[in-house]
View 1 (cartoon, rainbow, N blue to C red):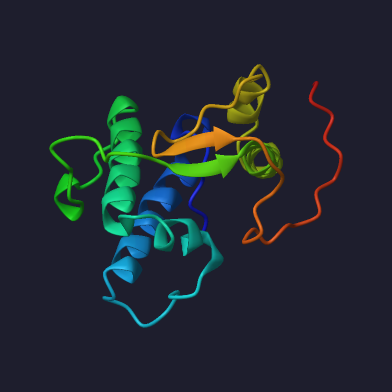
View 2: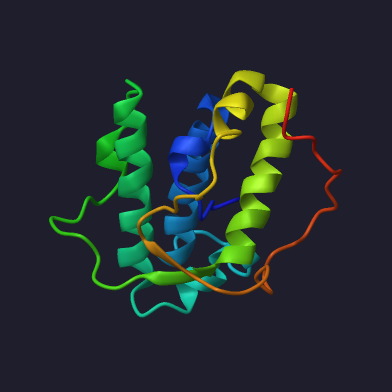
Amino acid sequence: MRLWSLHPKYLDAKGLVALWREALLARKVLENKTRGYKHHPQLVRFYTSDNPLGFINSFLREVYTEACLRGYTFDKTKIDIPSQSQNGFITVTDGQLQYEFDFLQQKLLKRDVKKYEENLVVSDIAVNPVFKVIPGGIADWEKVKPMPDMDRTF
């Protein structure tokens, strides 16, 4: 499970579809409607927020919106679209955001070079709007995977 902090616009088609499925699963976990994944590290920040279901629904709304912008037909009935935005935010560190962006770029280099190249111009990484960026390193809950140095030029 990967619930990207970065904005879903950076994801390729495969990544966006996976994010949709995984966020729907995350909501089921937060609703106690599944046995597995209850202690998954990606859910820590939702569990520790003041409104886990509100935030995951707002998160899903942003994924749904990105899918619509791309002309995809995600099933809107699978999510609770709040009539207004979730109040507040969940914090994410700039170090976590950079790690996620680099990790995504590594994936895109292998499966969608065009999207990888589109992301090369990004200098200020946007987040899913449920998050607010604060200074700091990679999150304690992140399972850091070693990444090769990537040449950001082609």
